[in-house]
Image (tube, rainbow, N blue to C red; front, top):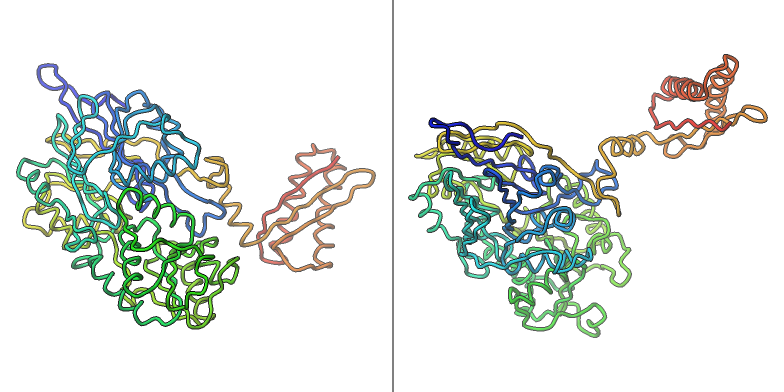
Length: 557
């Protein structure tokens, strides 16, 4: 890529800033953005995404960072906006592959990062984590000054930032909603956005997740009232699930349980991890110690509330194991109540619906949106998005954190305002967005995309492997082994193709053997004999069954 800067009258280079989304643009998840000015790069966040149903066997998806590795010596620092998995979950995979540079974030954000890094055996001394208040200014290199400001979200220590550069000011909202009654009483710092707008904002990068939703996103205080109303009417045990990182929601439920005379049991590794970090840093108050399931003892059912993982229907989560009766220590029964205080992430709808149906079959009472208002998004709706646009008054606008439909609806909203941005871009991951006082356009691309994590493998599975997995799941697999000595014969093994069928198996063997013997008579290479067998069997199976299983032909000489 060319060096940022272009010839100007008099031979001087007119500075320009490059905004390079490597993840989180045109999608929800694996957020990471790089800014480049001359020979300096600043990076924001490093998240992960979870696989869709068609990405079989994949555990996690992290962003591709080839561009950062190719320009590793230019990276001056890193900033983190908040502690959700889609913003910090990829760091254990990313940070070890790059030079050690300062990483700035709030107390809870860095607390959660430390926990994640420790799970991977990454020591504190291997990274340079620097805690900042949410009104702090930090300088990275000679070109970047970052000022953090508070924005309400579903987790404490959530920040937007103002990036001051020789080119101009950039405001990045981070994830946000303008909650007027946040659980911790700390409002979004709209005055700082307004002040920056009066000073002059060259570019606004803003959260687009709920750009299709009119009005305002409900407050966390409203969710707490609705949860308390539901819990107060439950007569048996209560099981509540939400995102493990929704510290405000979990803290509210713990307080509700205390007021309702219930002791809280927390089940699920990620839930316990987030709670322990939040409690240790003073972000979660416990009126009574949490219990383990073994400590419930002789408490009556109406005295117990379980907070557990499983809001997205994950197969090994606590709620899924309860729904399918595979939990080693707890069994649901009639009279219990289950509250799903969350909405499915796109792609998880089927898994969540499967769990809900199983809960109904058991006979428990189930409470979930939209029938019960026990969840509210952490992202701003149209009225809030318009407020930020009106306060920032940006010259240019880059809708971010959303799929294309969210970005485009955000752009359309901006054009309806009294003072719309002069230009809006709909960018994609890998786009190089060139920004100067007179310029706002995509001038090139860098490598970007997904790296799949499957077990201990990182990046060793590509889309071709996923396609094979999908084909095997849909049509099955058939392995043909042609043994040439002492007498040529064919053995077949199939899985997921058809039920045991001696006649069909015999026909397939004959077709394969005819192809092999024909090739041997013609003294073809063994590779060609194998290919002949593959083609003949493929055509026969399609003709006889109309199916297209994955075929694996083998020749044993």
